[in-house]
Amino acid sequence: MSHRPHTGAFIASLIGMLAVAVALQVARDRAFAFAPVDRQVLYVSNPQVMRRAALSYDTLLADIYWIRALQHYGGERQKPRYARRYELLYPMLDLATTLDPRFNIAYRFGAIFLSEPRPAGAGRPEQAIALLKKGLAFNPGKAEYYHDIGFIYYWHLRDYQLAAEWFGRGGDLPGAPFWLKTYSAIMLTRGGDRQASRVLWTQIGQSEESDWLRRTAQLRLAQLDALDQIDELKRIVDDHAKRTGRRAESWEQLAAARAVRGRPLDPSGTPYTLDAETGQIGVAGDSELWPLPTEPAAAPELKREMPPVPR
Amino acid sequence: MTMRVVWTIAVSVFRESVRDKVLYNLVFFAVLLIAVSYLLSQLTAGQDMKVIKDLGLAAMSLFGLFIAVFIGIGLVSKEVEKRSIYALLAKPIRRQEFIVGKYLGLVLTLFVNLAIMAVAYYGVLGAVAFLDGAWVRPHWEAPAVDPALLKAIAMIFLQLAIVVAIALFFSTFSSPMLAAALTVGLYVVGHFNADLKNFDSVIDSKPIVYVARALYYLLPNLAPLDVKSDVVHAVHVPATYLLLNAAYSVVYVSILVSAATFIFTRRDFK
Image 1 (cartoon, chains in turn brown, red):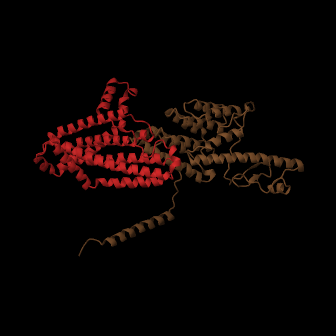
Image 2 (cartoon, helix red, strand yellow):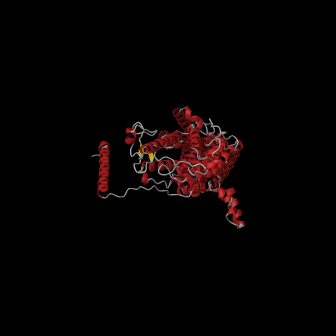
Image 3 (cartoon, one colour):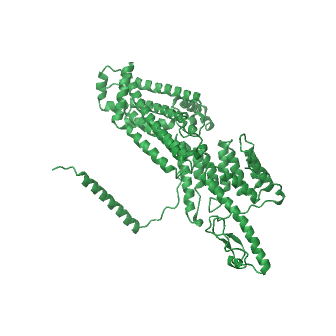
């Protein structure tokens, strides 16, 4: 009698035992549910230690941390707005850019993810600027980083003077795009103007560097359109209040008075909201445009003639 | 030393590694690259070309390192363990021919391995470039099928040639486990050498600084042979730099192989 098991029977018994192991795990997990792991872990947080430990595989590890940063950002964005945290975003980007100091996209996209206000981003423009300054320390000739720092000062921090300074410094670099100088002038003349925002986002939208950047620019331009439309709707609501002596409480009231045609839609196709108590108009929480950016406020003394719009 | 004998031994080492299915790692390398290039387009926000280049070069280096260490440490000790060394040394083969032949055999294996990997690597890069479409190409730092990548591959080969020499050196007088530990240890130290050179910035003691500086020049210096990041980011690597590194590698390998020969010729196998 042969003692060698039959191959078919052996494989079948192996599959059978594996099935039993899976069934046992399912039964255990149902009976003794354990808390899900909802916090990502960064085992090594010191970039210099990681750089040493990487030996000659530092750029590959940089790629891994870049992918982790993207997954962290994307994963948080999938969560409900109130639960989004981006705590590991900066440490991961710091690791990726220390491991590969020439990782251009990690500086640029990373800065966007960090500077975007919550809940869309980490709401940490100061970290974004720190990341870009680190990039400049390694790559002092990168005009894009000057542009991005200037943009963060303009769009997120409303510091038009510093924005103009960074755009100007970038424009001074040999081979830098001509429009950086124009941006600098725009910041000094019409820093908080909506038209200035439109000029900057239009330029970014023309960038061929990434689909994501183009889509972000399109969203921002749609939000600026929405801000224009809200101004117009406010004017209609105020006019109606003046004529009738009472504030309209709904779009239906305004439609009945023929002030608007139905419920006005924002550029994403979602109806605007009208607060019955305060008369405030805004985009709905489920609109693609929510939340609208805070309107930049220009210092009145800076309102001067606009320089030519760059093409 | 007869080159014909050396070549015969080298070819037999190569054939043995083929028989031992060492080149199976090529299949794994190709599958890894193809699978990763497919997956990465979804994960890297447009950085798939950079990541595939990084991964391919790192994989060439890592697979080569495993082969260099784990076969290198057995080059001599395996013959002693199997007692086949007696039959070999009974033939008209000088001990130095045996050592040099063994070394060149493994280096030949690594060369063939790297050459086939390089062909597969360029094939995958070309395919990804074709599938990515023309509109993304202007935004790459370097072309996909970039001849400059060969500079990094050549430097990886030189690194591996040094690692084989280290493994062979330890293989002549120590057990395989100890030889593996020492070889990996020297490989790691070889990437930290810059710290030894700059010891004066952390320690005031002059004698220690001199010892550290001496170690910097004596231990294998592998970090300068790593130009992977430069070529991927399209940073020019001058030919002079490559030539100096190549010359350093040849000299360092010669020292290690000579030392291995010196020890081996004095070993008593009775």
